[in-house]
Image (tube, rainbow, N blue to C red; front, side):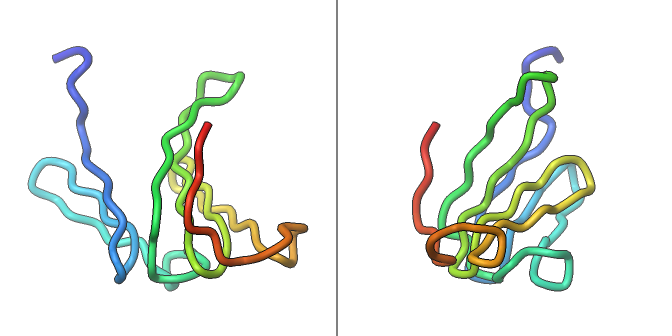
Amino acid sequence: REGVPTSVWFGTDLGLVRIEGSRMDLFDELAGLPDHTVWKLLLAGDADGDVSFWAATDEGLARIRGASIQVYGSQSGLGASRIRDMCV
């Protein structure tokens, strides 16, 4: 049905979890997150109409877009790596 979410995402102290139908996926440090503890999640769209999930962790931000995870931390110019909250 149109407008019905096809997946549910949530952050845990083990990583980011996606449940889609009967399938559950865990995204952790092995998958590319900067840290396994996810404090906050933010869903945001960009000018191209693409949607990204942003995950706040103790070691920086992770942008999850499709199958790609891009990490932003102190090495990429953030003043601090520990991120506990976000807003748009």
